[in-house]
Length: 202
Image (tube, rainbow, N blue to C red; front, side):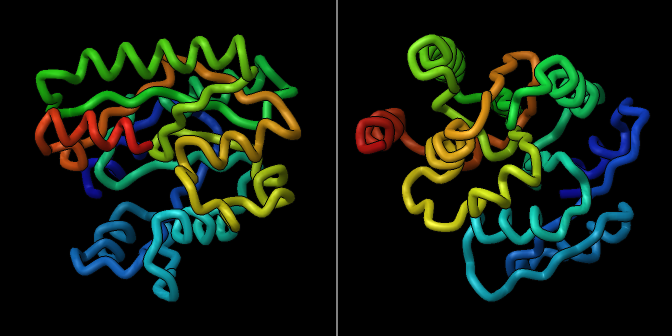
């Protein structure tokens, strides 16, 4: 979390922004670390769920644009600037989706990167929206998100499929391969056969 927040404090964006950290029952000094970086901490212990935490964070935020981030992810210094630039370039857009790379990539990472990018590029043409969304690198207009209920009622692939499908009903979702983030590979530290099985199930 400290590395994540440090990368946010080093953004080159010259406008105003706030950092909101949703504490979903952590036991690793999350609140203390977040406050040391000047972030607002929102306790949300009632339900243990990343989507519940994202929802509570969005409700607490005051900005017109909400940008989601994950604690185990690091963001380039021009991350916010690129996102804001895309919203300015596409005023009709309701959301901006970026890509993520692994900080400590497994041997098959390049294959995954290529497949994700190919799927999203094809989906832009066929469905007019990306279908592989990273919750750790996704921005949307707060008013639209809340008017649609946010994550409420999304019980299947809420980040990767559900939220994009819901937002695309009312506006354009821009996929920008240059809006990037670097996340931990801890979630995929398992056998390649298990990775393929998870992919097939999803």
